[in-house]
Amino acid sequence: HDAFKTNKKVSLPSVHLEKAAVLFNLGAVYSQIALAADRTTDVGIRTACGAFQSAAGAFAWLRESGVAAKAVAAGATTVDVTPDCAAMLEKLMLAQAQECFFEKVIAGGKPPALCSKVARQVGVFYEEAYAALCAPPLSQHFDRTWVSHVQLKAAQFYADACYRFSLDLHQQEEIAQEIARLKIGMNALADAKKAAKGVAAPLLDSVNKLESNMKTNLDRAMKENNSVYLMRVPEAGTLGALPAASLVKSTSLAEVLDASNERLFSSLVPDGSMKALSKYTEMVDDIIRTQAEKLQQSSEITRVRLKEMDLPDSILSLEGNVSIPADLKEDVEAVQISGGPAGLEAELQQLRDLNRVNQELLVQTEEMLQKEASEDAQFRTQFGSRWTRPQSSTLTKNIQDRLNLFAGNLKKAAASDALIERDVKESYPLMSILDRRPIESALPSISRPIMSLDGNEDAIVGALKQSLVMHLFLLAGEHVAGLTCFFKLGKTN
Image 1 (cartoon, one colour):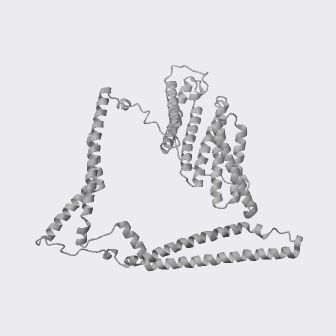
Image 2 (cartoon, rainbow, N blue to C red):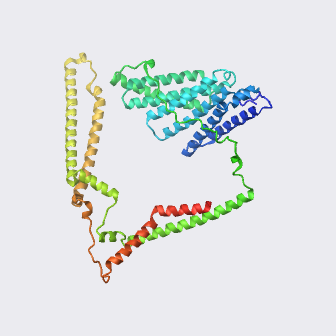
Image 3 (cartoon, rainbow, N blue to C red):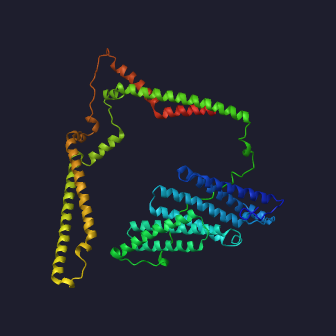
């Protein structure tokens, strides 16, 4: 039976038709696995994307291997296993796989320019599938709702690419191009909605939501352009094509479908052996888990005991080999390079100067606005109805609002700077240690001997140091992980 017109069927004694049917069903199963995945989670998106690419690989293999052509040559009259249908289904699966990536970049808050490229490629795949559906022999074979769905999806993602691209243009203050891109995308959506009949309600809701967002942005952009930017909106034909980024491809099934050896049945074992192996695996896993927990617990106890005895720091201090953690040393050196505490004081003074300059600019701007308002009031009184210019408060409202915002930000910044300056002054006596070079010279050292050991201090310290080295090696995370891997390797062997 034809998968898309079940009233059409064919029966042939042909292995080529059988192969074509198996490959088609394999692609269909992969697509169902993808549809069943929960795409609200990262794992679900990855599962769906991988399954859609595998489905595309199955349909690609059906076409590229010649199986579809041989089935047709053998007398197969159903359209679903023809090379044209396989090519269309491959593009449709790739479109849905790319759509999974689009959902991922949107959920991850990626930049609008990247989201636009991913969305554009989704649209390209849907456009290619739609073009195949509109050409013989598929044009008279598929239900109209199928064609309408693919057509509207193509328009949706083209418009979404325009929308995301316009967000990037807005950030760059390219308002004229933003308006042009939004208009192009909205026109594409409007045309597709007129032609597409009988599409599913969720798709139509998604399209309407996108259209509403684009209209909101278009109204805002046109208002800004008419009042502030006054830029000429370019014609649609003068704009370049939207960039696209393909992140998916048809998964090759050559190795999976290779039946030249016995690998297909190599993993099959008797039921009794499988149960025994499962029981053995559970027992070994329990032993490994118990021993790993004991090892971890003993390691933690040893670390605490060494810390209580101030080891190995006291031994290193005794030998004059005291060091500080690498990250802390890098931070100290960065402070020293910038001038140390004195350099920090210079930075604070620069901060005070910048704050003073900003306050002066703020006052000057306020005075200019007040002067302009005073002159406007004077001329309005002098000329009466002949003074037709809008009131100063209306024209300068946006500037005054931004001025108030800057004033508030400066006030908050000044308060924050004062807190930082107070903390620096309180900590200044302690920060004087940062002027010591190298910084290790500021660390205290232990004088010898700490206690009498009958003249055997060096030998005892050497033996203690050797024991500490061995203990630290055993406590190292790599060693513990290595033992755990060794346990697991023993299980597999």
